[in-house]
Length: 179
Image (cartoon, rainbow, N blue to C red; front, top):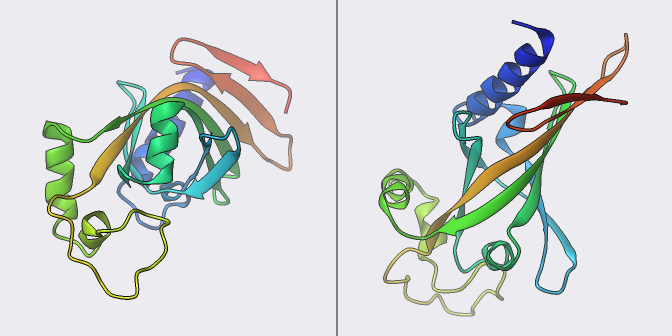
């Protein structure tokens, strides 16, 4: 296996590990996009799935959230990952879509509903709205959704004392870049 294939494989192995290992540095990347006013927004999200075969990442969200509404209007976004242990940064360019129903959503919800996080998706208020004085009734159905993030490119940067390395990976190409 050549060095390019090794780097590509190692990136996806680390992404997949981050979906399982709650302590992996890449478990909590920063998702950046623009809102409905064209202003930049960034927030930490939880990486839930990484599928190398489909070049796809998945994140859970409340479909009423400003993040979901902004991604529905403009599906372009970036996930930024940093691992001190690897000395690697990834900037993953994405095209997203929001899934609110279907088998994939139902299966994911079956896992989430067994956790304390389920309450977040059953809250009567939308994420980011003012906290009510009195607790409202839980929502009748969950506002649970999945962000399906199709990977367009990965900008990989390795910081090393012996010299930094950088490359741009697309599903079909690998190009070395000046760090």
